[in-house]
Image 1: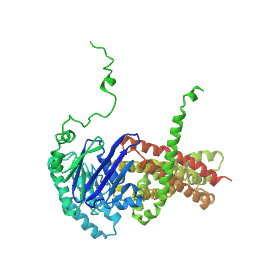
Image 2: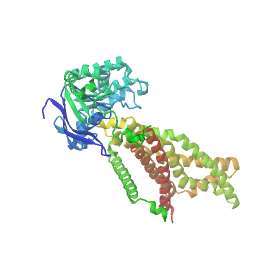
Image 3: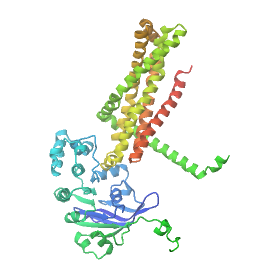
Image 4: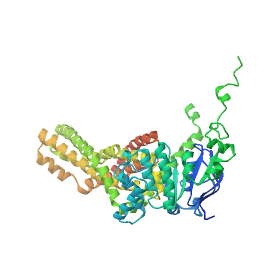
Length: 272
Length: 263
């Protein structure tokens, strides 16, 4: 595996118990030190892909390699050791509701390090400073707005200085100002902390402005991967449908099922 | 006969397989809880917080229930014993009934309703809010960090609450029997002193409470951990906790009583 790729996925297939294939023989890579964006239709397997990288789901076929390690072959201890090198930001933050902002960010430090409380305090305040919420350390999650909760979750995700941070739709529900700020923050943290970022997002403008690499998933396959400019310039009608947000195109809108004629009995109806 | 014809063997097989899978999940979780014991006791602060949450907040309902059950026992006991002219045995009757049976059983049923449902809802909502998932993602085992401290807190708390219930019940019986009706106080207490054996009665009562504590807390945690992460899923899991924990307590009570108090 090339050292320039922190995550590499090879011929991966994943389906759920009901036989529905979500990801079908996909191959892609996440370049080290870059911000990569994963785009595609809702229900297209983007979050599933994040869960496969973190080992929360296992592939039916193929390999997920994290820094050269086969994630599917790791035992529990191996998985936990790998996850200490990762951070994940969930769509709605997933903060511990019984702990205040400070304790949420301190949680991974207290669990995984033997640092003294004064040292933990300094690290937590530094991480909160990085996301602009040092002053909100005493607030409970119920007192935070959606954007603030996600920033706290981001501070928690980077508390242990991970190599890879995965963001699951970090911009959903944010107002334009918060969205722009959050996108710049992700870029800034990636550069200052030397991270590799993998982001699932539907906000193309905001993410294209801050990312280096784009992967487009469509109909369970990788439609294209490249720089934002390459994606914008693509002649592939499927990519164009995403970039122009058009309802018409090769990406199916309707979930597979019986035809309209069959469901409404149109073929059986005699003409007037 | 026609009812049996309608039974589809495949459906029976599917149901049995599902039941066995649930049993397997439960057994695996129980073993993992026991294996997580060392980690839990190493961080006793987590258990201490849960003892406060489960025990302290259940104390009022347990104490008040014990007192009222004692009132009723004092009254009913007096009415029955008066027929045989042995009202001086009221204290022993109240104390033995409470210590041997009602204390552990009613406490366990109240504990299932008060603390068990709270545990199930808390774990279920943590799951629905992705807090369990985020913990796994942070390489922290939720069974060791969340479930095991609650389990041991429940196991420790139940015998203490059972003892409080029995003690409050005896006081309730004394209030009604001695203070209100006028049974001789000396007879009341001396009958208790002479009739209640520390090991056979109090010891077995605490043992019963311990077993009920294991059963109720485990059922509550299992239901929360296996709950579907939706509002309906958490709601159903909470209901299942009360039903399953109560039936388990009553079933275990019969078995334990048969083992402890059969001549």
